[in-house]
Amino acid sequence: MTVAPAPDEIFDRAAEEGARRLDQSLLELVSTSFIAGFTIVFGLAALGIVRAAVGPGLGHLAGALAFGVGLVFLIVGRAELFNENFFDPAAKAALDPDSWLIGPLLRLWVVTFTFNLVGGAPFVFLLSVDGALPAGSAEALSTVAEEIIHRGTAAEFVKAFTGGALVTLLSFLLQGVNSVGSRISLAYIVGVLLALGPFDHVIVTVLHVLFGMFFGVDIGLGALAATTAVVTAGNLVGGLGLVTLTHVAQVRGAREAGD
Image 1 (tube, rainbow, N blue to C red):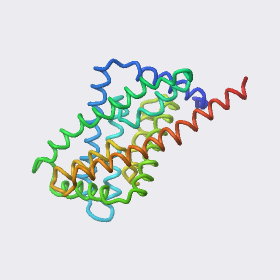
Image 2 (cartoon, rainbow, N blue to C red; image 1 turned 180 degrees about the horizontal axis):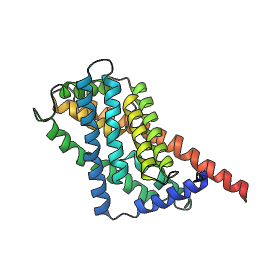
Image 3 (spheres, one colour; image 1 turned 180 degrees about the vertical axis):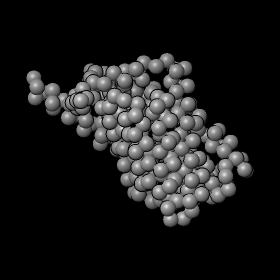
């Protein structure tokens, strides 16, 4: 019987993975981030296609079940979305409190954020060409975009806080399992929950809104920028403030007790 790793062992695994991510060359980091950007669009396309096919009522649930495959593609392919890069690199930084690796962390997050969008936005544009997706998909994706833009700021922040916490928790949980099957299951469950909420991940949210804009929904750049700012802030507070810092405290407490 396989024994589940203790929290401090999971943390050490995360720190090792975080060191790998922080040490990537610029070309590798740009490429990985670009790949993640267009990969997650497959999940968005699946959501729109299935939601349109099922129709009102169960369409939201069915779309969420379809979107989960996008996160599976990301995790199995080891591509990196912005939020998915919170826990592991921060775990590495927590083991180096003299510097906290501020420069490498900012480099990782800025490049990942930027090239997630650079990779995803052109693919969204291509899929918005008339006839590229099945009938009804454009309306389904446009509806999601309008729902996002018309949320209140407080609700948007809470959804982003929850989404940031959920994706960062996924990073922690992935270090606690050893098989590909377990990684696939975790990624799929989290992907479904994200879409079911819906809970916002800034890259996914921006790409959702871009689908709406390319399909002709009246969304201005100012509204897109405001939504991006609120969701990014919520992701940071939920992912780093709630999940990462509490796991750092947990491990430090356990190690202090063992000294």
